[in-house]
Length: 336
Image 1 (cartoon, helix red, strand yellow):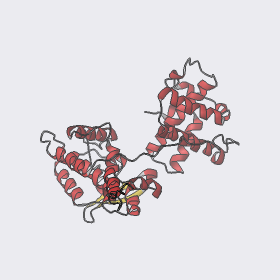
Image 2 (tube, rainbow, N blue to C red):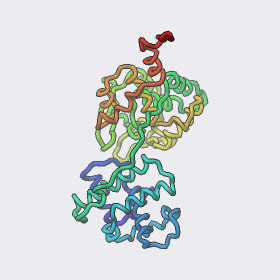
Image 3 (cartoon, one colour):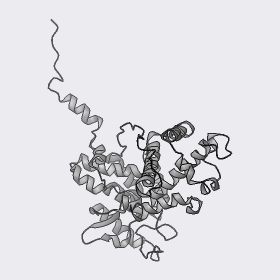
Image 4 (tube, rainbow, N blue to C red):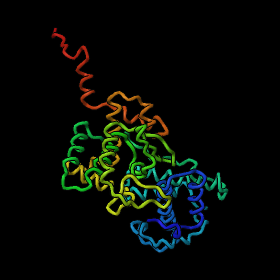
């Protein structure tokens, strides 16, 4: 857990701006904090301002070195230093291109703030910074049969006193394609049973409506009678829908643990599938069954249609069928 008291003031000023003006979510700001502290530690090593003997020790550096860091260190940063940081991530941690791309995004946003908003720097070292090229990967998802098997496995677990809760959680993931943070954040007041819909807070604190089908309504209605009666409300008075054994809002980590255990029980590969893959599953199954790409974009809460278009892939059977349907598929010219 990151403690703001460990940050230099010039970092906290940026985080405050992202929260108060840019309205970024708590998770996004936490990622900025984590990425930038790691980058600052690397700079201290790079400029030989701390007694750290090898790159492998950078991440475990005493946080006080960062806390007491002078802004003069930031003023020294050149594009080559950022490239060196990305190279270090690949060498020492074998970081994937997606991870390095996230670091690039955090660093770019920070220096854009310093130059364009805070006016603390005249030259932006990230002006010509490129993101690592990402190979196009098709999203992994459960088939319709695997999805039904997962739900059946949860329903059949008579020894689990949280069966109704876990079934409702999985049903919402597989039917609505919501994000983990969105599901965890659902409060009772967010649900409109009369209209069969609920409101969730997505990325960038943007609110959107998700409509509930019969499976979702039934799963929630089955869960509510067995949900603890005395629930600990949030500090703002909201009453969470899904609660833990401690009768408080269930955590992201707890939901991830639940889904992993249920995937294992269903005989599904947990190295291949996860909570986020259930979101991919919902999106893919809906698209394959005729849902318009624009409607899918709205449902998933994507800002750009380009993000949603990863679900327009077709499976191998469809490709094989397309080739077999070629009118030349069975034609063979006779030898002369």
